[in-house]
Image 1: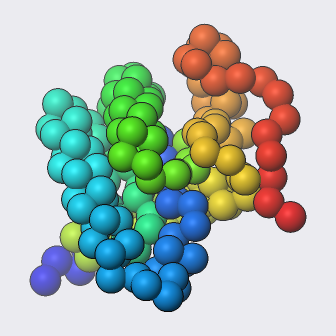
Image 2: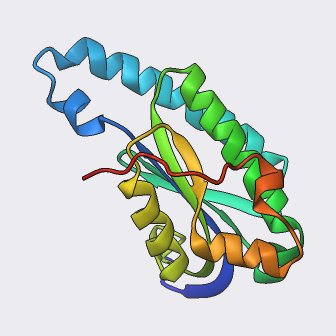
Length: 172
């Protein structure tokens, strides 16, 4: 077992399935779980196919109702990591909506710490994307302050990447 750790500054996206706990706790869960598992299997297959187009720059890990997509290399992260990650995230969101899996997500930039064959995920970028992703009360994807700041430092305007600049519904 590989117990090594890797820490890089990179792009990180965190996605969470809305209402997952309610679906699992549903009284007649056998049919619902089979439908949910089938939909998730299809979403994961399409995510893996999408990532295979960027196998040198993008990877993902998942657990329960959470998917984490990230740029793998720090030197790639600032140059081509963002467009590849953004394309992968938008495709993932579209696929989930098409498969009737409501997800919310957030993209951040900063430190990502991966360990034990990328099964353990930590770091400021992960925590920020998780926090902003969990605070939303809608189906969608947003940029965190670190991601917006990083894009602006690269001379890019986040509003030109399909993001809006207005209030979004937040959980209470």
